[in-house]
Picture 1 (tube, one colour):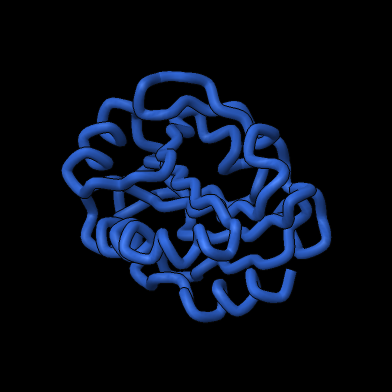
Picture 2 (picture 1 turned 90 degrees about the vertical axis):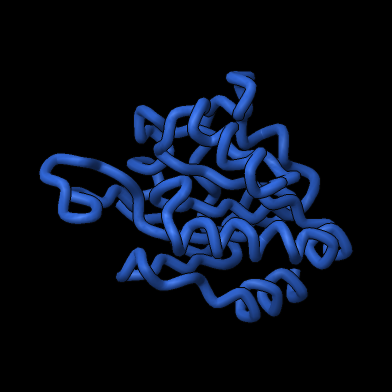
Length: 156
């Protein structure tokens, strides 16, 4: 089941690049942008995550925290974050628990039979963890609409 505007964001407990547990609750109190991406070191994902990196000051000015989430192992995410100097949390959903809770599981990713990843998705949450913006791309090769996200964040 997918997550819609107006719903409470499904809680999660995932590990970051240092294998430290991180929960959704720790981001409450400020706007939060959850960025689900299918795979570290892939072309579109690299471009997307670097776009968030390059716009981080803009999100900070809006009191919005950016959190990247991928199905990759924390080791790959650590190398990816280090290579691209990503200065926001990158969380590993290697069990696909959050991906399934948000209803964005993607089967047969990149034509690989039985390989499960996630759809490219962005969720903007208010300070109470209520979803105020959702964008799930039908094609994982398409980046999200960054300007629409920023416009939505400005409204709450």
